[in-house]
Length: 379
Image 1 (spheres, rainbow, N blue to C red):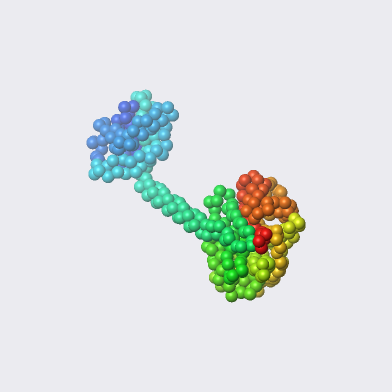
Image 2 (cartoon, helix red, strand yellow):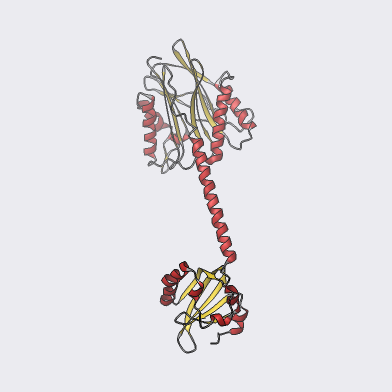
């Protein structure tokens, strides 16, 4: 049989086959012969396309490729591996269509494109994607591990005050945020509560958050005031050359003769709220500069004596900036709930977190960190 356009197919850079209705090869071009490593007379009239396929590819040919040709009359860029005479395999893409032959019987005309480079590219792409997925998994695992250090396993037991904290990551918790809180003792009757928010998300933000927590502990003991502590933290951030800023509020709790004094300093952070025993709510401290931005931040400290039943609430902007459509949770809702919320610190942070989550349909757009401190009767 003579192939239509024989000169074109003799010189074609791709393989070409003509198959009869029974699958026997009726004609081939030199490129196909080179692909399989066999002479013309060993193939034409004696072999079929499936003779060059492995077991898996034969099954696919019979269950998918051939039925596709029978029903649609064509098939495009189907991947197979052709077996060579030397035992090697060649990845190829087959495109076929069914047309009438010279005698009117159907002829399956098939173009064979060698796909070694494409297969190599696909394998390299798959390997790169797997490596990226593994790297992302490792990064998320590292981030979650770091995130677990952002909050103490349980607030310490301090005689005279009731402390409770809660942390809720944004979304499903898979993305690491920068909110944190910490409560630790400086010396006898002297405690520091720290709560803050490092800008950004992901592992980089988590690393900075860990640095900030350790830096706060490092500057707390030698510093005289909470404003000096924040100044030291600011210098540490600038010295570390982190390209991220953070907001932090520090509250130092000191006991003298059975009475508690709170010293508060805020670096770019929302001011804590004080609820006295009558239910009146007011802010503590004064707004200060963001940390990690300027060499000489503007920071101040306010001291206030705490009385039995007084409660101080520290919170991140995941509370006040929680959204329901275009509506924000805001300070007004926060103050209203604080005025009437549970009498214990744990009841307060639990009730507040539940309310904020309900407000935004249980979908936290940002991390939420809360710490409540209540002066106990024995204080």
